[in-house]
Length: 436
Image (cartoon, rainbow, N blue to C red):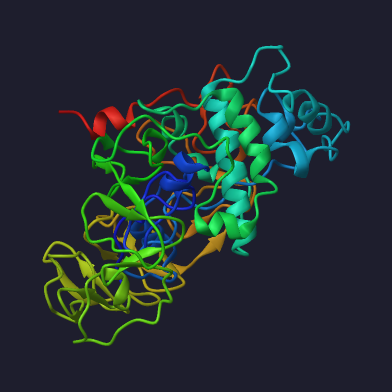
């Protein structure tokens, strides 16, 4: 079925209650880790045609890796360069060295572990946030037997997620905290028990927030990154969570007014419910579990339909997902053309005349200008013009590595400055969401 924005997933510090099945990246970062992933579930679903449920996955991505083994062609280990090396390159990348001369990651990690880059200057807040996000998300992935991946997928909101007004974090403390996460017991992570370095914010219960690091309770109750939230009082398992100023800690959800660990044994249609978490992915809660719209029914309320259908634009009616060799669909809530599971459109936009085809993985440097053309591992689909009409599979560059040369492109959320990938500066996400 069509899905809405995945919210803020992966890095629990990004936020408290986010998304339909509660995403973790926002909460995680402020509490301890950083967030993961930035694209909406609808966009991912429209491009890949795979899966597709009413809830997005971990919106922040959930992939944070601990640094790349190997390096750029110069032999300098990408994961082990600069102030960021000790945490990102540290345990996984250190010692692997560059692909040509064997340098880089090992020596870079050594200098980074002390909290200073090769220049002898301490890490920036942005770099420290990246390291912290990667370490916390990687630990969560290990504890849940999921794939942490590589790069900075968990760091979408950095550095705001740990440095917004009210936060007490510092760059040096975040680097130390990143190391602490490597050995954090999984049972502590699940229960919401974090290392002492995950310091609470200064904002009281009921005060505005966007990230948990801002709150004295380490819990920010928000809907998404565009909507201001409030600092909430954390309640434990089997405690009442009906008050608007409360939120469940750890991996618990507010189910039937009580904080519980979700079992995901969903209720049948027509059964009484008090939370969206109680109903299956083809249903929503309206006092009882109610089916999402079926074929030819209006999907205006949710932009979502039961499995096998999508919310078609512009009439906002549920239609069957296009199959192989059928014209691509145009779905409400996404700019991507829509195809059924396992398929993608051979045209770049819904307005283009395209058909649904099998996805093809192309070679590095080849075009990825349509959803049907996918880049191989280690590359990133990068724009070649300001309008981003033409795109190609560029080599993915990490912090300090080359970019903007027609061959390499920065891994999100890095930006290319002066021919090298740099961490983004403070973005003002909280100020934008919570402006009077």
